Image (tube, rainbow, N blue to C red; front, top):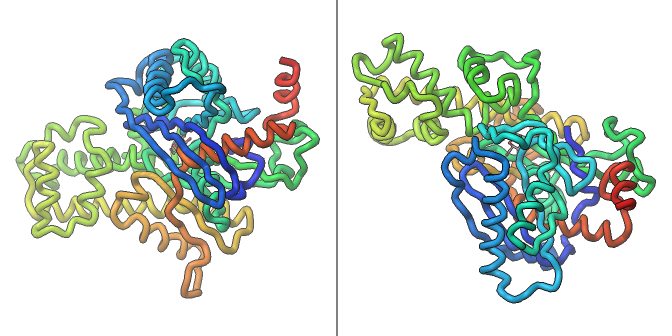
Length: 424
Ligand code: GLC
């Protein structure tokens, strides 16, 4: 549960031009956001593919790549000389501790990233240094988790928003807490922040149950964890997020194939390669409606596997276990926060590849929430809705809210951080 130092609800009247950068699983996205007020905005974005092997590169390479992409974007979109640096919201979708809004000390990499020399350090100076080296006129004003961005972007356009959620490569959520109810901040707050001041919290609930005290794990979950770069971390996420769903299914299938329960004497060599099945595999098998499950057949052939109709029926059922478990567990985060905050009605704004693309996910997630709360009314009072773009619009709105606070002389961090900022 990481305090994210967004200390205001957006009104929808914020204005200005901002840049946002988002390091995702396969792309780096740069977005130019013009907030127009009246809940309106315009965006212009470019996507840059991540270079091969960047997930395990050195820190310098990663930040240099980010700075180069920003430079290309600025050169293309701001050709004339700028009088002031452009404010940037830096979406960094990993657990990063913050004592002030423009810092983020990476606790640990998640989602398969394993870049040396970043864990334990503040990533903002790393990006700032790389930008300076290339003379890019940008100032990082806020570091933002994707869930916090989603929460704020969606609140900008819909006042009923209570949570920002990502169901994608990773799984996580953010919500607004009362500062007075955040034990981590006791004694650390500056006087201009009262008990009733709102504070966005990045829950990082992908790491729920790292102690393995609550959720039953299958032998496949245990192996995935053991063989991951960070065993013992992100336990919840490893059971349900897009990065791992294909791997859970691969292990299941491989187990059955080794026991000769599927594929008969047909070869399945490629299935032995870890992570060879991304989430498009369970996604396709799960709700395949083609004749004789022909689409699943073709998908398996991509991995050199020949299958019978019976094999594919089994795979369909297995994939539905993986998909159903993911959806049902994923909404526990929503239920927990709504119960804690005593929200009787809520719009929970969701984004991410699993939410967007995994067939049946939305219906299963809604059904699971209904089961948890045992609603009897016709319309569900807590609903998962499609989010506004968190890493673009959300980052821009947070940058705007931060600049406004700073201009008003209000704090955006803990007592000690604010004092050291003033002394600088
Ligand atoms: C992982 C990250 C978290 C992020 C989530 C969704 O759980 O640790 O920071 O919000 O993925 O991208």
